[in-house]
Length: 67
Image (tube, rainbow, N blue to C red):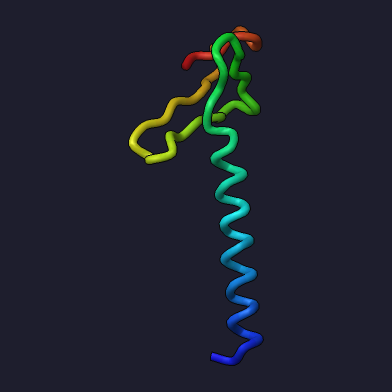
């Protein structure tokens, strides 16, 4: 592999690592804080992918959601 391709590949891996750590930084919520849905089909997947939960709007009530 040419040296410039190795350098490009290394930069790509570092970029992926940066995105991965940024996503993990938002993995916990503190006691007393709240979650607010961003849209009608918002969900939160566990880091392992074993479970998830989401928000679904209650029909006829725009300020209430089912969990």
